[in-house]
Length: 300
Image 1 (tube, one colour):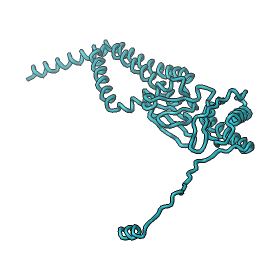
Image 2 (image 1 turned 180 degrees about the vertical axis):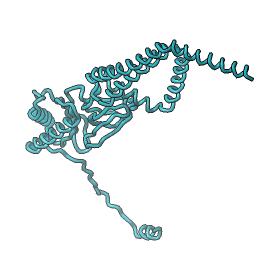
Image 3 (image 1 turned 180 degrees about the horizontal axis):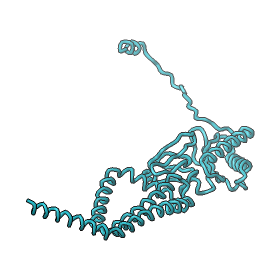
Image 4 (image 1 turned 135 degrees about the vertical axis):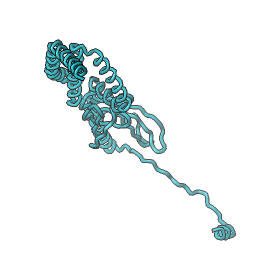
């Protein structure tokens, strides 16, 4: 019994001594690993601030800037963790950690497929120079001013002050018309004049009214004027001209102003803008027999 006890005690002492020797042997690596982690932590803070300042020169959205800065910090810390594990000769642990991270990342990616798609789409939209906050755009049946682009959605403010929130993925996958990329817009006006009107006079008068109303239209010949059809009660025409504008509101104001001035000029010159008229003509007299009336009454 004493021999077994002494043998077990000796094995315990040998084990503890081996652990102690191993600990003493790995203390420098452990200290170096701690230094690596501390260095990576402070480096992550510095790099996060640097990346935030660098990205702010190209991206106005605070949410996107913060997200990119945080991702850069996480990458630096993760890199420091891998280096620290390598310094401590924990290669197997490093391999297991990478494998586990891959499996977890795949599971999260499948579970949050739609969310991640909107996130990456938001990052792509933020770096696009042709889409900026304040632009007037039209997409997926909505038109308005771009108010915000974040990691989730794309926010528009319509002309009637309604806020429209559209997923980033939808914006990226559908056509988008940006009116703010050009400083000029074409205004279309469709109208009709009576058949008794002098068509050449109407054309000349309309062109002169547009040229005198808008500073951007220097000459009457810059206005395009085309008669389009013989309508039911009028001869219709299409008038179009260019103005300096960057939003649909400016275009609508210009069209309104043009219609008002054209109406004033037509009233002054006695030019008629007819509205659709339906004439009912009863030339044929219908003869109704009394027998027919009795039959109709009996049916009712």
